[in-house]
Length: 117
Length: 115
Image 1 (tube, each protein chain N blue to C red):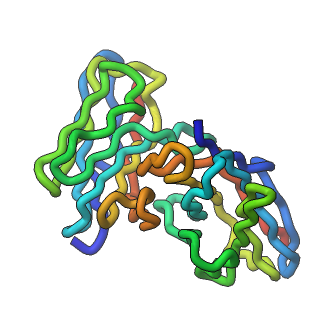
Image 2: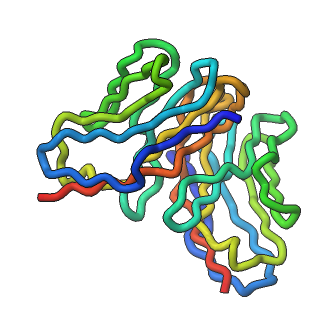
Image 3: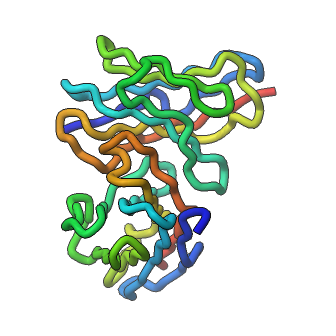
């Protein structure tokens, strides 16, 4: 596609429920990243996929968070047993090759605004 | 650990005045450096990047940034602010000491432009 697409754009969920967020990267972009942006704060790295390599999960805040990616296409970020502190905008980005590591910039999606009530 | 620091969470300038947004990184090996802009209710856009070529980097919308190794800085400037420049600006770093491929972002600087 022309850009990085994320769905849903907004999600309100009850505390304790599971949520699944989706990201469609730009076609041909082998690297995909998930970040979290809490209100008024910077971007917090969550996870990074590069082709068929093992993902870099070092930013996932707890075992309630997980992500999958099928080949070099769609990725889903799953949050189990959501808590109020999970409320944030979840941003997905994709890039050619390994993105920042090779000096390529990211293309970001518009994000999913998650509100846990 | 590699990090990036943005001095000043809020900067306010008058229209037509110089814009200076500060960014310092910590790495003994020069990393890749980026500036992103986030306009209200929009996603992040790449403004410019430093990838070890020219130390003065020009980006979109009249912005530029200079990589200064001796100061471990990558400050963003624009000679004359426009109302449309009001946004949040993020400095980001990758590579460097850790060789980390994922970008590490600063906490952001919100730029206000007064008429």
